[in-house]
Length: 353
Image 1 (spheres, rainbow, N blue to C red):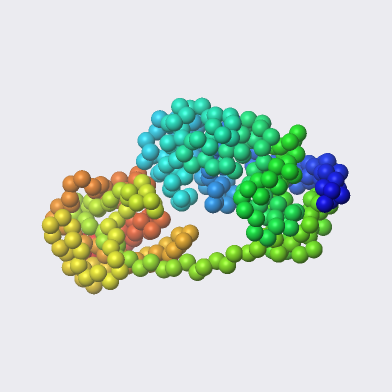
Image 2 (cartoon, one colour; image 1 turned 90 degrees about the horizontal axis):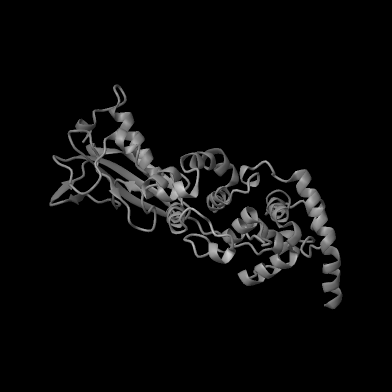
């Protein structure tokens, strides 16, 4: 054991130099959040990159979000609904609400230590370490999905717990060059030490890697369960003035977004206020399917006219609806309504209903 420990320690400086060379040649150094020391911009990137691919964040969300909320103070002063609207399409909307709450809590100034950062809503161990390292120069390791895979292979770990992984991450860390080291580790996982067919011959960590003989054994793959299908009935209530009933969701899923009224599948009648409305075949607007991370929604959409929409909810027109944060499924329904309402686009909506 002692000789193995000494061998690891002896090889570590060599590996650190190899990682630095590799990152200089192959690293994704042009990513905008790697070309700034603005902790706020780094913070936004870290939250967006949770459960979202780099390409998606880079092409569609990072720039527009920062243009709308250029500073942490601006984010904190904004309305929560405006923040969720800007986040629209990224999913996992708790991230947006936590960003807004954190901006208000720290009053426009991010704390510098991982411990203080973790006291803010929505910031866990990895995000706190990443902000501290990339924004404030702290010598802290990071632990996103690609780094986890690299560590499991380097140390031949099949199913390590979080504490073990963090211990190994600290052991391997280049504390004198933590910024580039951490970026290199993420890029190695994304580009070289991939889930399938890793290119071990190109890896600067090969001299230390215990798992390179059978790299795909580490970590043990978890079997993914097939996402269940949830069948629903969605009812679009509308009045003669061309307004539509939307409700603001207060459940954990899609919290803060507006949506049309949702019921169990295959219902024949729905209640609104004190009145009951029977659903007829002629009122069927169409169907909508939307895949989410843990289930797929399949819904029949009905358009039902009412004499008066209830007070207390939101009753926008189609144009007003575009200013509200909506789920992807509700956006699809909105497009269906817009298509039917334009001249020559389909049947008259009120006649349909």
